[in-house]
Length: 366
Ligand SMILES: *Cc1c(COP(=O)(O)O)cnc(C)c1O
Image (cartoon, rainbow, N blue to C red; front, side, top):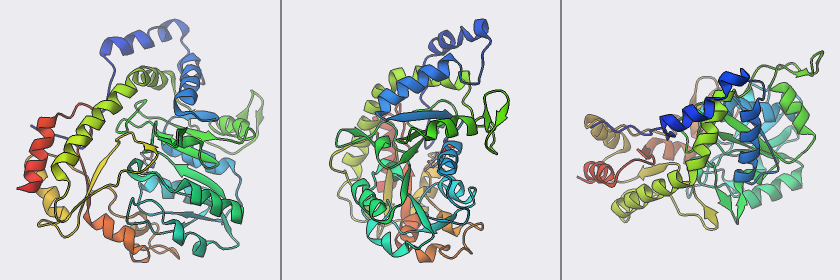
């Protein structure tokens, strides 16, 4: 049987229908309706963040929160290429220059020992990524940012519901973005949010999410449309009721993978980070000196209709739109380049059975 790399969690059909029923009475389908407002409140509490605004997808949330910080065009933003291309685009599409910092070989997040050498008088911010739900070194990043007067905006697309030292991860840095895309741990079909500390951002973010309109007769910003609609919010309200159970089921699957793939020569699993409450979003495996290469394992699984993902490959600084920039080209970030060549994320979702995991591991180990 075919196994995909991910499979969306869903409430029962009846539960979703019950949730959307009153939309046929209210006829209020978008523009910050009652479901949007309810989901915003519930997520603020669940994610343990000071402020939260919902968006129609995670990308526009990240692009929007960077835009709201009003950095001068042409400013530099330090980020990593070992991510989904959305991170890099959200910087570049704001007229800012992404400066690529390498990742560390332990957890593939930004290498904090290499950040300061990239800071120039044009640097305004750091946009690190909590890759696979591996948390960045938030404390060192905060110290560097404070010393140099930089903003910190996390791409937390992979880190929904995670906590560090008991605090919601979205409360670290000046702002964070979570993605609620259908492939993520928690979803609203498409969707996302920006979390932030500064009260002054609220009006900018909410206006800019709706064409820059302020009330009915004023337009303050040149902006697009990024509103979450009521059907998305309804899916979010349903999925939030079940999220803890879904994460618990993912943990069972991850434990099984670890049991089968630990202590094998040439196979490296992600570190288990201290003080971190994980969400078990992804199961990346590094094939470094293993009897098969990453691409061979990928192909063998595919022959059996098991779809793993070369995530993240290619690096974003190797894409045509970035490779000719001053810090573009994967060779300038050799650690990221190495892991991009040998990492594979294995299928992982709440309903993946231990039998399926055993079948996947048998193929890898055979
Ligand atoms: C999914 C993802 C995004 C984009 O989120 P969307 O909701 O799909 O727009 C950005 N960054 C990372 C790391 C992601 O995985």
